[in-house]
Amino acid sequence: MLRERGVAVCLLKNSADPAELAEIRKLVFQSDRHVILSRLGGKELNALRPIFESRRNFSLVVDDWWSMPGWFNRHADYLIFRNYNGMIVRAGLGPLVPAGAGVPWFCAPEKMAWYPIACSLLRGPALLASPFWNALKAVQRRSDQRDPKTMIYFPFPIAAEDVPLGTEKLEHDFSNLGGTCGYWVMRDAHSPAEMTFANLYYDRKRLIELIGQFEGNPFTVFDWRRNGRFLPFDEYARELRKSRFTVATGGYHLASIPKYLEYICLGTPIIGAGLPYEYPWLDECMVSVDIMRTTPAQLKPQLHAALDRYEKLREQCLSWRDKLFKLYDIHRLLEIAQLQIDGQPVPPGYLKNLPTGAPGS
Image (cartoon, rainbow, N blue to C red; front, side):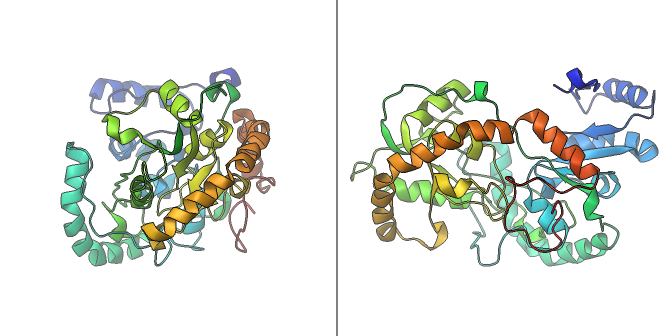
């Protein structure tokens, strides 16, 4: 789609390869065209930093904005946010994680892989260091004050061909098809250091494990983690279509994950938590649970009540399907990004409950 619009696309394959970095340097210095950096982590961005320190003239698409290296956040002409919560936090209008959310100080890794093990082991030292790190962040924020007009909302797209409806027989009352471990380094100056290496998806983990306590008594439950592998997308979509409800939250950090769109467009209502500022249609397609303040005894009647509402909520999901394809069509989203660059607000249908002075309003 970008190539169709005349955009030159360059893929970074190996950030440790000096020859490839030299080729990228040569490419970007051949013209003064604006460069947009996207889908890059801290390691890749730091490898590219020597190129853009001298060139500048770039913008940055930020998915996990809280984990982006500070130099790029300060010097990008535009920060293009997939998650609106980042715009709220950077405008000083709200925290990354709401007060009283109950983020656990430690969460054991679910997989014996080096990254989750390292994050779990480093969680304690990160907490101890957080007061000193937050003091440094306070200094960094003085030179990291961004004009709200240079923060652009660019949500995740969805297309009909990616989420086909099927004729599968319902087999699961509740399913979990999302990750339950999310560990990050809080690199951004506006993100709280004490959340480094916290499992920001623990709320999701708690909810599916509470539901799992009632498997066979009387509910049927599917949890992809039992397979010990990530599901290919076709299999993921098939299990989703076989579920009456599926678990979804944006995590403690209220991220607008693409799964919200996928689940609803596949006709499966959500049980979990919504978002404070995005997806105004989401409440019509879900059952909300106060995950961290609900006991198993309190949850069971809520699950029964959810199943009683299933037919109505599925109808709501399907009624939104075609509307969401139009709202989140990639070409439409690019037009909305350009509107914001031109100084206009985000059109209705995407955001809700915005505080006074919020970016994009």
